[in-house]
Amino acid sequence: MKSVRKRTVTASLTDPQANLSVIGVFQVVEDAVTAMLGELNADNITMRNRHNAAWVFVKNRIRRFKDLGWGQEFSTVCFLSSATPITANADVEIRDEKGELCACSRVELCALDLQTGRIRRFSSFGFDGAAAAEQGEVDLPFTRLDCEDLPEVAQVQVKYTNIDFTRHTNNIEYIRFMLDTYSVAELQDRPVREMEIVYVSQSFEGDLLSVRRGGTAGGDLFALQKEGRTVAKGEILF
Image 1 (cartoon, one colour):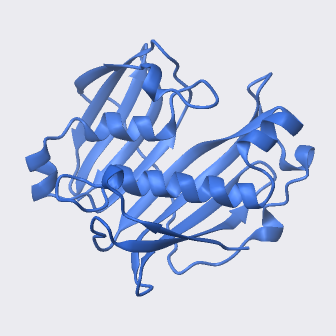
Image 2 (cartoon, helix red, strand yellow):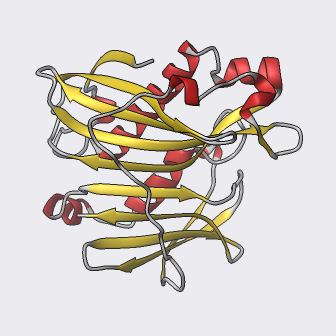
């Protein structure tokens, strides 16, 4: 099953150049994945009420091909591309009004038991991700990120607006923490072409996070740490 939705690039999704921002891409992807899960009767409200469980993002990788400007219409195509008994990959394609691919994403998901915090097998709540799997235009495999011993470039404290439905830091907030280590001029001169993030563990309101960054040949590696333990890690390619 492919979930297709039409949207417009609104002001809240744009960057300083009035184009769909990197954060905007991640927001659009999150909306597309949660909408698809809703169509499968497996959105987080339903999951909580029926199964005392919730979906969480484990990994996310985006690739950008062309800009979408403010006010421009686009569509999202979201579908499950693969699944195991405990994880599923959801792919999202962002296409302009001509159907041309502007960006794409692959998200790895799992379901957590809200009482124990442990990963739930899909069979425990009747979800068959493998049966719904579809093929997309772009294969976007995840990579191994070696983010050890990176220098600290900032510290951030998790606040109220960073917290989501499951009472932990929302997945997009970690991306914001990473991107905020750059200036407007830096990202205007070197636009983000790809970004990958791995969510290792959780953080909560009041936690102090160390943002660590180190350069590579094509971009930068990141690690966000709480009390010396990695909470999330990522890579930006320019």
